[in-house]
Length: 221
Image 1 (spheres, rainbow, N blue to C red):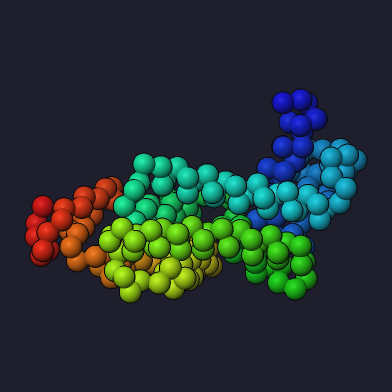
Image 2: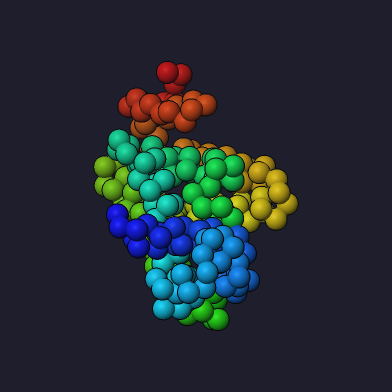
């Protein structure tokens, strides 16, 4: 990586955190200069405008979350295992977030609304990717006989995402992680008890490891 590329990457990373914490509108060029350690000219030497920087910073933040998803899903095959793994990404989200300041998709969606259409479009695309991931897991899970045939991918995606984001919002608002913890515990029960096929016994340990044993009744492992 060249010096110019390294400088640009540094600006994007620092801007991603700044925008996620203070908002796009609430972050001035002086704030950008402070977090990057660069002068105005040094920043705009790599970006034509603050808008362009905001789009690249948002893309960086979303990629951080997607990396967490890819890591959590690696090696997981069963649909319930994969859904639980997605929930697991958010267990330490407040203490060790991919980007400081909460969920960048939620923050950007709330702030952009109609004021920043380009950012709003990017937030929609990011959310589409998250929804599609869950919907594909559910569709494949039904086809393989792992999930209830009555499960609906779009409904599951809405329930999981809305509950997770609501838990994050409440925990950030009250500076209390218990709200997100309750949301994740509820979703874990929902996935394990309402979505899984009865022909599978689901065993959840403290480390969220799972075992699936074909059986006719729920029996102890």
